[in-house]
Image (cartoon, rainbow, N blue to C red):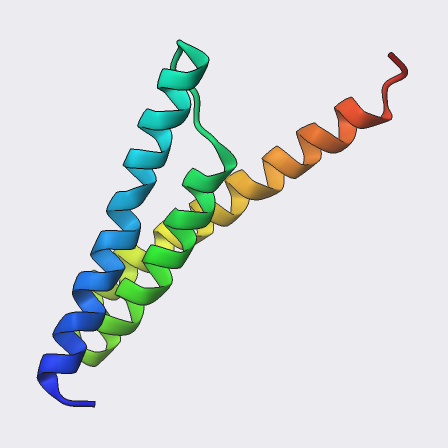
Amino acid sequence: MTDAQWEIVGFIGQFVFGGRFLAQWIASEQAKKGVVPISFWYLSILGAIIVFGYAVHKSSPSFMMSQAFGLVVYCRNLALVAKHKEAHSAQPE
């Protein structure tokens, strides 16, 4: 890919990553309280993967490390959400 195409990839990654805040804002407005929707974590993961690829292209170890660390956190949060849902679905109503 050309440098211009990589710049587009970087902007797309940042747009997806930033979109998580829009998703969180909309969900909070709908709930009338602060919430973090599951889409926040999926957008975080997708954006971080795209930005990580851009960071690899730019050969930026600090940029790569920050995205890799974030990916661990986002995946762990999804695992915790799934565990919480599983525990609550197992309880009789």
